[in-house]
Amino acid sequence: MSAALDLQEPAAMDMSSDPPAPGAILSVEDLTVSFDGFRAVDGLSLSVAQDELRVIIGPNGAGKTTLLDIICGKTRPSSGRVMFQGRDLVRMAEFDIVRAGVGRKFQTPSVYEDLTVLENFEISLPNAHGVLRSLRFRRTAEIRARIQAVAGQVFLADRLAEKAGRLSHGQKQWLEIGMLLMQDPQLLLLDEPVAGMSPREREQTAELLARISRGKSVVVIEHDMDFVKRIAHKVTVLHQGRLLSEGTVAEVQADPRVLDVYLGH
Image (cartoon, rainbow, N blue to C red; front, side, top):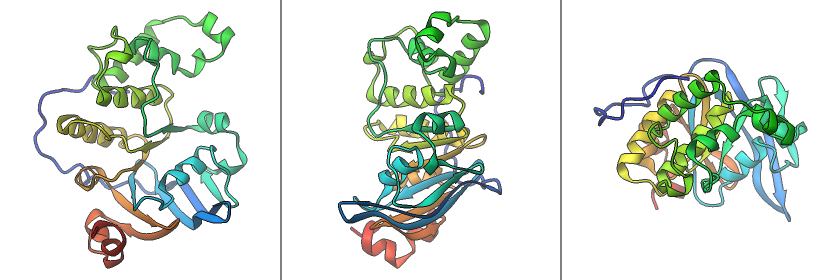
């Protein structure tokens, strides 16, 4: 993990300019899932490269969150595969998918509000789970250094002793991202990570995600197109569970189909 970030006001920068590294870390292959006859995802195929920051957009009901649910094992597809580093996630339990290196953040922050920020980071460590492991847990110098580094990344280095419940909504979003980073996943799935944030917090989150994607792959669901422009290496547009368009931000914004079903409204 990198050291604490400089929290001074950043100069304007194009964070979408760094090209993703070649080689797919995630491949969704002909994925379909139906709920009571309704196809929420319909024959969907896409791939995400190593160290890529992919943003998925589309109207409500397009299948965006369902796709993340399938990748992390919360929902089982009717057919298709989800290949992650050579392993089919569809055949794996949720906890095994986490252990394989996939981290998921949901729309609403899920943190332990009665615990301090430090304790939230500690409890998210892989070796801190379970009764016996918790009893044996020791706050070593290595763990303290790791927590300090992650706290710096997510702008919470000076909040470690504070109860998580006292954080702002945006800071809780950062804390949950930091808790995922403590697990050192290779793929992060983030569902609307800047929802409810102030403009300044959105700028800092764009910087944070740009930094994370230089060592990990990140898939973000987002509706804020200004934020999408700041972060996306590549954009995937879903509509009615299918891939409608894919490319750079400029390419999908110029696609008449995207304007018709999403951006034009």
